Length: 423
Image (tube, rainbow, N blue to C red; front, side, top):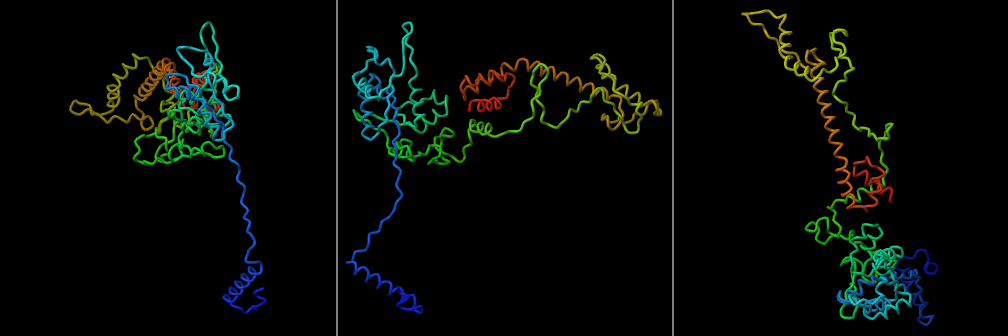
């Protein structure tokens, strides 16, 4: 409209002034009210609260000052999460807490019965066999349910014995465990469950948030940190742990030489090096430049030890006498010549077979020593390797893999096999 009114020869300032006047005129015609502007915003997905899994024994004993099993402490914790809007709450308590025991009293047992009727409290099984109580491990129930439902574990326990059983259990303990404190009868969890640089309590209890783990948070002390590899925060200068390296090696495909087996099913490893032994074979012939094949033929077989010693003692004198046979005699003394090199590829020497025999004898002695050491080392190396691997992996897995490969003495290969079999 402004271009029709002013024409195409109008300047930019005239067009702006005309547009302002048209805007003022339209607003006055509608009574000074501009049409409402509707802003379309994407609808936010409702945040779902995580399931709460409460360690009943830990909470009750903490509220009872580690002297009495306080059922009231469990009710306080349940009411706290109910007030925050959580609908899925589960409390695990061992079955033997139903029984009255003066040595281990339970306060307000009716509270436990009420929570059981509401479907919140779950008893972990236990029974008596020959007047001996057999209790199932309730901590395993807690971590298993939290791992399957992506829930939050409410406990002050570290679960050190269960973190090595499964990677899921370790992830739950490190990322989804909520600590707490009791101030009289008030349940108080921290507002920063994963530290100062982690998520807030509201974000931690939401299922649509992915809280940052302590490993991803940079250490505030940087290079001045004195915790070393035990620091919970991320350091760019720290090396990767051994377990992470082994997992990467197991995940990546490696090229290796095929395994050979003899008729007695013994595994034989092939050498990856291209070097060859410097020891000459007894069946090889030595041909020297300027000599015929008949002059220096096949080497003689190795003599006995006595003959070897006698020949080694007499070889210098015999070589001198052989060399000096053709030399002229001056002043009653024979002229000595330079002894040729002992390298068999350069000059023919009389003691070259002796050198080869000495090398063969040394090699035989080394092989005998290796066989004697290998007969005593496998048991020691196997037990030492089992002890070291059992500190990283579960003992049943290490025992299973080592039984499948009894002749394997390389711990890295055993680690890779454990990770491949128990993925």
